[in-house]
Amino acid sequence: ASSMIDVMGVTVDSSAIVGAILIAMITIWHLGWLSKAKPTPTVTDLKIYPIKSCGAITLAAAHATETGFENDRIAQISDADGTYCTPRHTQYAKLFHIQPKLSDRDNDNDNDNDND
Image: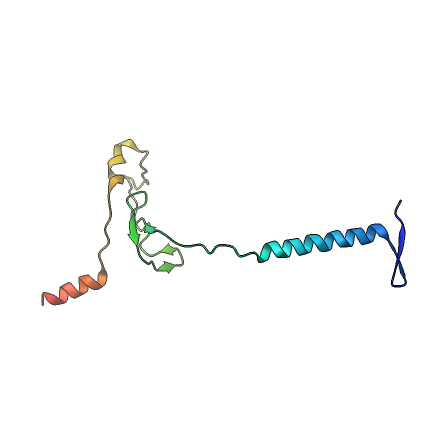
């Protein structure tokens, strides 16, 4: 049976006080846990795959678009019927060893101007 306690002229059930103390302790613990410094994520390797399932290109920086990184998965390997192929299709498996290269548009334009 719970007992009654007089708190500043108000009679309160002791189980209500115990419950309030527990809730306060849990809240304080939870807020303390949330405020602990969490490590900031760091990008250590940034890759794009211009041809889906083929080789990667490592980048120092990338431009993010609404659909993902620029030039990431801009092409795929399909058969003559337009069906997407994967490395599991043994007849096409060697195609997935392709190592794509992207040209630097700015450098290409500069090279074109040098030839004039």
